[in-house]
Image (spheres, one colour):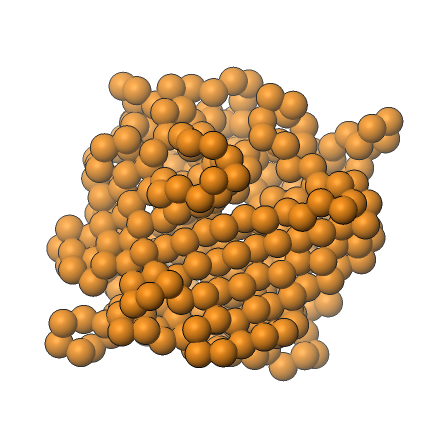
Length: 337
């Protein structure tokens, strides 16, 4: 398995999927979306998904940029949960808590490339029982597939030989301007959610769900992200409780750059959406295009079940039993303006 400074011994495989509008670059290291280019009216292309200059830069950082996060995306309080009569202890990699699968999560592992053609690529990963503390040997698979000229689908599946927990998401950072030296706070955002989860100072959900109505978290109608920042405390890094039934693919969010007219519509089959306006990037990190990153260079829209759900029986369950298949569908539809 790779460590913090290595992409592993296996040479990463990079695959490009092309349509009339999209050029998606995908990589087996972390089953990662490296870049997403949209074709402009003049024939030029603009990358709207944050990309680093080299694969080694992904291994050296800790932002899960463009990768599949797991075995459990987001946070688990005190890096533990109860499984029947015992406590399962996980890798603690954010203070006392567990984040995005632990110190060597799925974003830091070399996946196998098991199938590819002009429209799709499939990556697979097998992790042993006890990896990062999780019970059960887990087999995960991710397929990226073009959907006509304007869409890209990410289908994630997993199975386990023991009762375990699974919550897999995709962690792209979007900036529809294509300029990652600019803040993504100037985007218009819409999220189909009537409630969100307030959090403590460690970003662990507090008891209960809060209505978005009459708060800075109300994105039921398109709103300029920057104008909402003053009312949300330390910034946006919160789970939104999506409307509609879990397990059904449905559109849940729309992001738009008013200046260029570029847009992104996100659909998911999951129950929650973590909206994170980045605030941790530093100018010594550069994008693939050579620009120093703005602290808020991108917006992450991470569909998933709720944070800390293994410890919250009132939240959608992340539990996976032997013989069951975990499945999460994510789709993006893009507009070039």
